[in-house]
Image 1 (cartoon, rainbow, N blue to C red):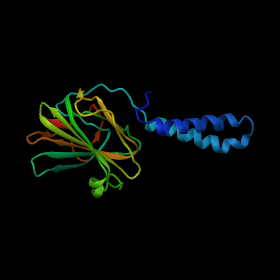
Image 2: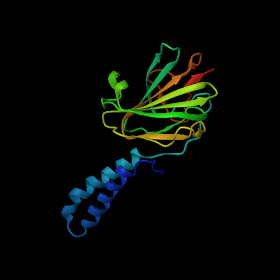
Image 3: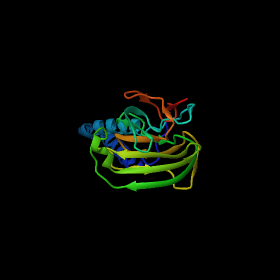
Amino acid sequence: MTIARGATPWFVPTLATAAVTTALTRRSGKWALAAVPACALSAGMLWFFRDPEREIGAGRVISPADGVVQSIDEWPDGRTRVAIFMSPLNVHVNRAPLPGTVTSVEHIAGGFVPAFNKDSDRNERVVWHFDTELGDIEMVQIAGAVARRIVPYMDAGTKVEQGERVGLIRFGSRVDTYLPAGVEVGVTVGQKTTAGVTRLDRD
């Protein structure tokens, strides 16, 4: 199992603590009180920061995130926002919804209310813009109540393939994709999505 880039600050200290406390149990069984939860936490971190390989799905626009479609909203400019909520159980590596070129990656400071809350639009976030065959595509990574760090993997000017890894959000959070005017939504609220696989639009 591959571990996501950007997981080191969380995963390595946890793993080191588990290794040390487990080794100390040889001296005294009392260390098991610390070793057991440390090992359990390490296993949880390993699961959370997993980054599995994916066979990229077909479609003009594919999901950038694992999770559940939280809302589908028509925007005044004709675009449609598809918001995907990611629980701590989902893979949190996000992928490019279309092939193209990253034109901007903007970090915006904000709060940390739960990602499923309507006020999460004002949370800490990273706004991506991609120049694609459909024109400008906006994708927003939004931090949640626990997620306090978004880790972009690319800078402006980088060419990306559809489904390529573009960043990580640590712990539960949300990813919004704005479909251009004229592009019909192919998912429904409550539907589960898989990053790099599930198609967001339809013919």
